[in-house]
Length: 292
Image 1 (cartoon, rainbow, N blue to C red):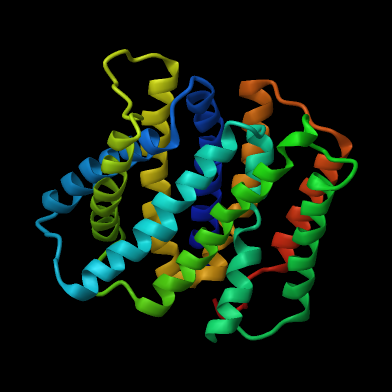
Image 2: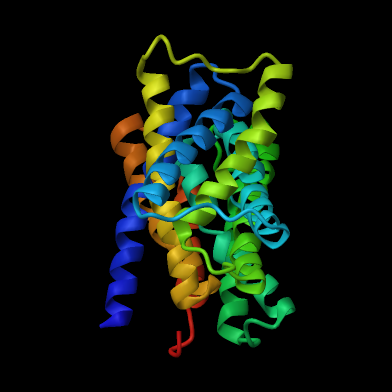
């Protein structure tokens, strides 16, 4: 029953999280800068997390260990990967961004091996190999990208997957310090605002939301969806470990491609579809142990 609940949670997370690359694509295409988008994403998360935390009669602990936790989650799970994602989204199709998200467990697995959280497995190594081949299909000589000059931004997007893979292992190593996922997000989002607000202000990239068009609504929607799915993601890590939780990338990829085709009318070459299939195989191989 517990396993069924966890897999159902992953399915719902994938279906909702999968639409965020489309929303981000809408926002960046309108000219919104990553720094400004990170500010609003963090602010919205602060508001929601704060309301939920205080409504339950809880508070936000401020101590050195807790600040380290907030900083680690903020950098690895929000500020840095969002900078990579928002930058790459301007140049890559939303479907490609979704496919690259599938690399999260590919990165999580070797990090977990090094940190001693997982044991070596031939099947998982084959899964990682599938992910590597998929990248070659996307960025290789017969690139599956609409514009071959955008190849470099694939590696920018990969930086986000690396961060997410590292974040799950960071939480497993450092622990939640007695906090629930919402409290962790509350603290991490506050750190995110402290980091991103000066950067956006100094570079002139603050985004006023006084003219609420589709791009601005997309930013708000993406932030709300990210908050809900991200809080759930941290909860799943605590229940089943980082490798199991990172499997949500499998569903985010599938739903992301579907949403991009339905909402943005994107179409892909045979190379992209081959990469997509390999990513799904890779995720299936990088699966949790039965004990998880």
